Image 1 (tube, protein in one colour):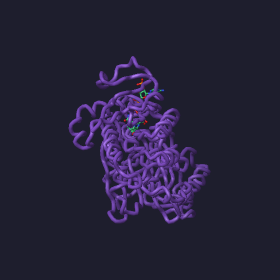
Image 2 (cartoon, rainbow, N blue to C red; image 1 turned 135 degrees about the vertical axis):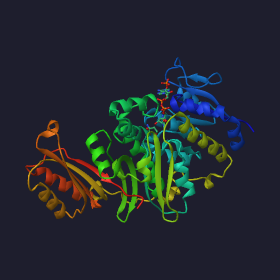
Image 3 (spheres, rainbow, N blue to C red; image 1 turned 45 degrees about the vertical axis):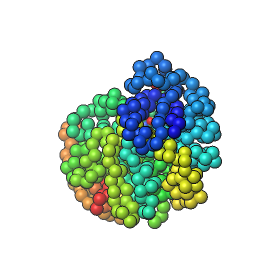
Image 4 (spheres, rainbow, N blue to C red; image 1 turned 60 degrees about the vertical axis):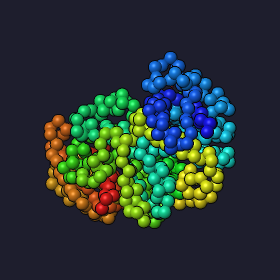
Length: 439
Ligand code: NDP
Ligand code: HSE
């Protein structure tokens, strides 16, 4: 059979990983796909850069549009990133009847509804396995293998850079900045690393997870997003004393009153599976009503693992070339006319456990006043701890740390506001969530 000609838009970390993987596992891939895959053209910004792959057989230029327009290119790989030119090029490729594979979660989270509608109109497929959790086949698992289940919730560590930073700070004692620089050096971080540390990259991935899990439109603007930048060594240590690890989680949960979509640092019991996922590794737990919980663990970033997902999409795309369009796996798991408008809940209605850390003047009556406010707002306490602060942090001050049982977030925020209004309390308290997914 005629080989498939692939055009690469971008030949950076992931693009080079794809070229290398196609060369290293060529025979095995051809045995699976049934056709040879040839990367014939690539577009980059700077053609003089040294590439991390063998490029002798690739026609490398700077004109992305000419690849999209080239009638000899069967499949376009969008590996540039971002939501600007990546969107225009993806739409142009679709309009020209080309299948597109992308690792770009930003693109899919923001423009996926338009992209998939265009793909259906033009009878092509847009694949994006690498966009969520790098090499872990979580999209395939949720979209295909769990299709008999009503998915109740998904919770996971879905940003490798953020997890790498938290692990390195906890176990290697390095600073936030040092750990971030190391993640950048190893190729995990986004071109703009604020996407990693402010939770934006995880929000992109969670928007995709939420749509595939619940059959709702991509709703990036409804994902409540908090990063890890504000975490302190104090909170990581207090959490540890109380038996928890702090992990940056993405959580998509179905409730009776709508769907919760949120990304934030979370206290996870230290023996839980998710608490023990370290460095750039990702792990996603999915709870399906028939199967119960399942966990998908592996490398969430880096050249080889991401290329593994991109090349798997390529073999699927080749198979798709010979299938009836009506029988293809829908982009968002559910048939396009079955996408529902289930409401997405506001942050104030989220329900889970909470971690509060308040700095107070160490005087009589503080605990009583704080617990009275919590009781008044129907917030039940699970654990409470007081730690006197050394003179350098505030002579005569203490941290009061409270872990609550499951409570409505709006009530917890109101309680914190009332507590901070007491004369004995300082502003700038810490509020984190607590999750017990494996109970
Ligand atoms: P890189 O920054 O390493 O590579 C981007 C590539 O795009 C480079 O080759 C760059 O060219 C090229 N490029 C950028 N702008 C242009 C332009 N205007 N015209 C032509 N080429 C251009 O990114 P990654 O490979 O790390 O990421 C690619 C995508 O994969 C992103 O969407 C990212 O979020 C996603 N992803 C990345 C993972 C990872 O671990 N790195 C994991 C999962 C997904 P040049 O090399 O000349 O600068
Ligand atoms: N910057 C991303 C991460 C790359 O660290 O997880 C993988 O999507």
